[in-house]
Image (cartoon, rainbow, N blue to C red; front, side, top):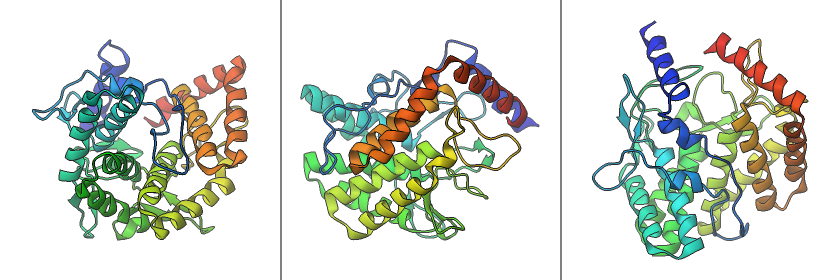
Length: 324
């Protein structure tokens, strides 16, 4: 009961006051980057321009922190650190202003220093606070989403600096992408032999779409700057997973957030539906595959329909009240 009370206090704080804090960071306006170079490292695939404008707390070195309020307080979030760094890297490519590159490097250096060994001996970025998704994740949890996005920043910092620390850290972080969840990695193989990269490591796995796509971009980036054959194999197998399963995320009038099993399907919020559209556009560019572009356009048609928007929003509210 106490855990649930703390959860709702945080939710009310960020939804019902002007102090959007960490939620404002996550819920940026999704936007695809111009000039994506799918076959070589260039700008990150989403602009993260809103994230680069984050004005929240940071530590003495300039690494961003999140204030989760209440029982969690101020914490490092490895995923946020990586996304903030990527936002500034994109600004650097756009403006050639070195201060943006320095800002990205500050975050990347933190990632290098804070890879930690899990109980299976793999190096991961841990979240040192308890978090709730379906169930409680104890402090020290890690994620394919964080691993992949961290790799994407480290790859670009290596490209700019040729500092081998970034290369080694990216390699260490990538290993978890090749190992099953029950052996300390972030990979899940379903009953149909589909390979997923899981954002939250819970049982049963839920196959969150946005986290899978971001993690997969990290695998592709690792391949681009190392030409590692295993990375290419993982990427290709995951693309096959997406092509075989993307229809399962199509609710007919909206997209689903994940494939979790409960009486009500977990429909995407308006923000995550927009994010799926942008991610699918970018994945189509990366893979040169119109399959993903066609789904992006299909989801866009849902978003343009005011009746679909209303039904999906009401359904999402009911889902939240029932399950959260």
